[in-house]
Length: 331
Image 1 (tube, helix red, strand yellow):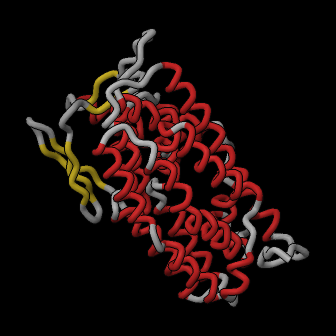
Image 2: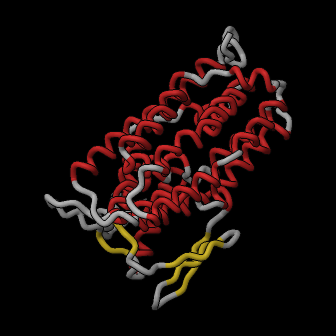
Image 3: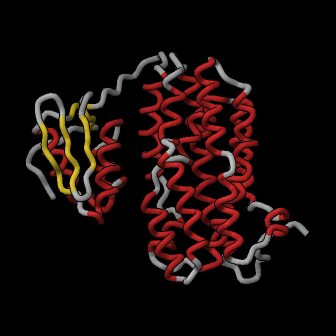
């Protein structure tokens, strides 16, 4: 769709724009108006994602289209509608030699993360589910590797509990720690439903990329707490489309309900517990982030994102190979 008017270069919602999410529509309001936009089920999550990205700003209409590819052609019209109603402003990109507040850095991290995702041509595991070429063992492999991350999570979090800057941050980290306890029991149920017994679970080894991800989180928690807090947002994001595909492909490959249901329940716990905002809440407690700290965090986030993408490929390469030891147990 081509518009005769010029759109903002990096549109951003003004402050105090509110949303109400209904089944097939989203109601948007500010102090002067109240209107709704249609949100069909097949595009609902993409529209929600677009609204969220506009809350953080910093992305061009072109990059917003890449990030929300299912509604890419409609984005110019949506943006023009929002702009005509006075809901959007231009994102300020002032180049300064100073730092920013933790809350400002949180918004910048969201923009950075979306730009980072655009650098990868595909996410292999997701792509295989989307084009329905994923295999049963690859789905089970995903559950196996997710078990390792979830099982190790409390141990990875532990150093952060002793590395805090205020009582408020300590309390937030403690609450997050408690909320993560015993999540591995859900994934253990999934594995047992496909014939993996307790003895095998105890002797399983993670793939190298899974171990590298866990090791990175542990190092951040102990040596660079700011990177640890930022990294949590990579693991607590809303991934409804991913889990919808996971359920669909599990059913198509006749995996038992007891396999995919605990995985979906675990994902639901993350959403219901508002883990998605833990990074924002933690960073809001930081009054000032220096330019050098921002750079260090972004470098660490970039490395971690690469590992996550590589892990998807490694799951496919290992668990998709009929000659691989399955499950991957230490002998």
